[in-house]
Image 1 (cartoon, rainbow, N blue to C red):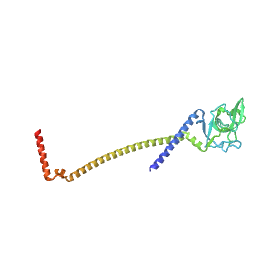
Image 2: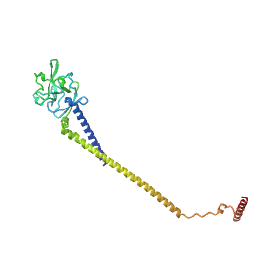
Image 3: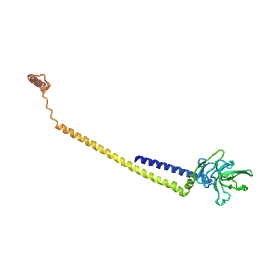
Image 4: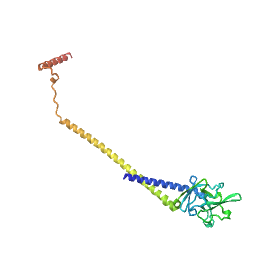
Length: 280
C-alpha cells in the first residue's frame, strides 16, 4: 500500500510539472506574439500548421513536408528588414494570400520560389509545396512580401527546423479559451485542491502520531513507576520474612580464652573502670 501511494504521488508530481511547463510555454508564446503575431521563445518560434499546403514537400527543393496539425520549430528573425533570403528557403511570414483577401492577414509558412528587385528593395514570392498556385500573382509585384514581413525561417542553407507531427493541433486547441481551461486551468485547480487535502492529511497524521507518542511515553513512565513500586514491595516482604540473626556472644571475640580467664578479664576491666572513675 505504501509503495502504491509513493508511485501515485510521483505520477501526480510529474503531471503537475508538465502542466506548469505547458502553462509557462503558452504564457510566453502569448506574450511574445502579442505585438507581432508570431511567438518567440529563446529565439525559436513554434508555429501550428493550419493547412496541408506544404504536405509532401518539394521535388525541386529540400525540407518541408509538414501538414495540418503539425508543429514546426523555426528560428525567429524578428521581422528584420535587412535580412536577405534565398529561393528555396521556407519562411513564416505575415501576409494575405492571393484570392483569400476575405481571410485578412495571417501567418503563413511557405517556400520562397522567386525574388524581384522592386526599386532597389528585394521582394519575395512564395508558394506552398502542395499548392498549384503561388501566394502572389506573378505580375503583381506590389503584393510580394518583404523581409520586414518575415518573422521566422524554418529551412535555409544555415538552419534546418524541426517538425513535431500532431502537436500543432493540440497546441492550437490549448490556445483557445476552452482548451486552456480544460488542459491547463482545470488540472491546476484539481492539483491545487489535491495539495491542500494532502497537506491537511499530513498535518492530521503528524498530530495523531505525536499524540500516540506522548501516550506511549506516559504509559512507559507509568509502567516504570509500577515496576519500581512492586520491586520495593517485594524487597520489603523479603526482609520481613528473613530469620533474625542470633547475636554473637562476646566470648566469641576471644576464642583463645578459657572460661576462668574470661572471668578474670572481666574483673580486670571492672577494676580498671573503677580506677578511672576515682581519678575523675
